[in-house]
Image 1: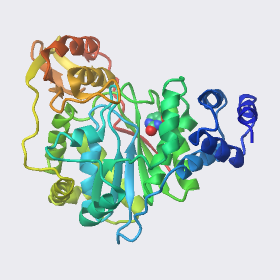
Image 2: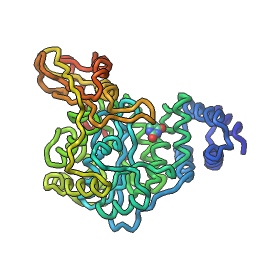
Image 3: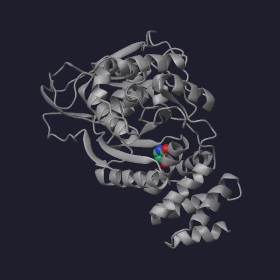
Image 4: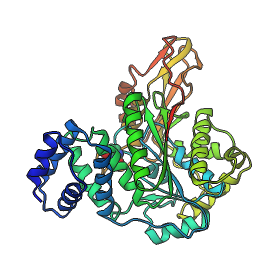
Length: 421
Ligand code: URA
């Protein structure tokens, strides 16, 4: 086959065959299709899109580029969740042990944060001793022992996606729903779960800014899952304001532990339970996640899961050396607290990274003293900024200049906007 022919076919709006797609992805991974040819093909996909058959074949080709984990034989059905990423999204930390406590096995492969959205691995690494770089064999052992494991995807899973994502990142071709869907699903399918729930975020702090694009992404991923025999469904959920009251790493772990202890912010509890119900139903497990949260069963699994991965669930979490309050500008009702601006502020304070190689500061972040809908008083703290490096405060505060409104129009999205699948 010939790369130029494949590029020209997509450029001219023709549907590629499964054989063409399998060949081009494989040849690119082996270095036989040049970077400039693959970038031209990705740009043609950005403009022309892909049919359901094409996107499934593209996902399959990326899946085949590496190993596929196998968690059959655990004696429990496997289920997993993927979030498209948001600000203050610590749901995985609670959901994974909760769903395991209800009787399913949750093999959760998570990522690191980049830019204004946080990553689950960075959050869990704030727990002293915790490690996410497990071998597939150790991952299976932890899953068998506790029903839950959260770790990093090894280099053997969907290596074609790793290479392709790096190329898309520097060629302006990330923004294609079929390419995003195939990228996410190739990694999730490689993880070997039998069912999958997708939390597709919508709003300023999310990858998808509007509900129509979020729905298209959700429908594309649900179709890929179905084509690969994995029961997949999606919730479209709000990311116009941060989730919960803590944004960062250690502060989000602390908030997740509050939820596991039966407290915590209502939006975190509500979304965790909504996703848990979807996961349990998809896995065919009849259990009440609210009871598992209330009764402490989820906390027990959390403690065992953290300990099995080298962490000390009782150790104090790291705290930032410096803090500065941001004060409410007026008295009234907080009507807007922009997720993206808070995410950028947390990132600038050291909670996130600008480049893959950067280290994050576990104690850095932002605490929210009010959420949209809450009353605020002029001159009282609205946010607390946390950092190890006080030189970072000014740039973080700049990011927040237009982040909130008092007594403005009510603009909030409902927490769960819709369900797909
Ligand atoms: N996240 C992914 O894993 N892949 C994409 O293409 C975009 C976001």
